Length: 221
Image (tube, rainbow, N blue to C red; front, side, top):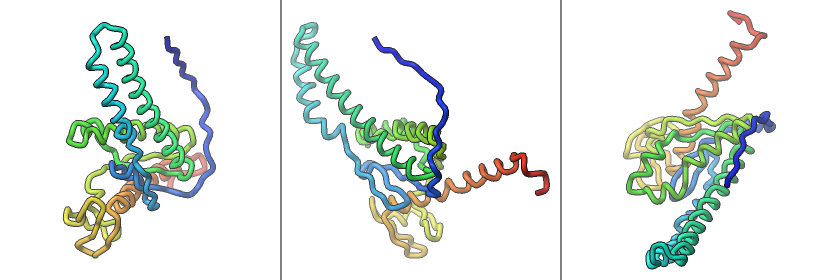
């Protein structure tokens, strides 16, 4: 039996940091921030694959309906639970650090479900971006922070320095060189800066609207 309960609690805003960050997620690195921090991808499923293969082979050899098969099935389920819990723990810690250190966190509005059906399905399921983004939003709401998901199109092909966008700017998985101004950078770091830049106008518009609704302001002021 499982019991779950939901309770409504007051938000506990964290002190302002005056820091803002853009986050570019990937499979080589879990995420790269506009501040230049590279967060390693732990690859929990990949690391547990050897034990999972052994357990699944054992399960396939057991006779259906037998006690030995039930034990083998339980062993496989236990390994999958371990991987899921490791991933969840990593997501919690990474999201908590970003929320603790920044007033604004911007990330790409990715179609994670659709991406999980392509050639990189296993790697994408292993990093678990959907779960990470959900935890990021939940922690932000609790801490009084702001999380914004921006349009991901061309963030990896646009030069953060001059704004020129073309496919030729991305000369490799990790290399970026603008054909217009010659700016060079790590491709993911450049993308993270573009993600943050796209989020800032949204924040400014929200602040303007809040100011217009403030009782202390009158029309025309």
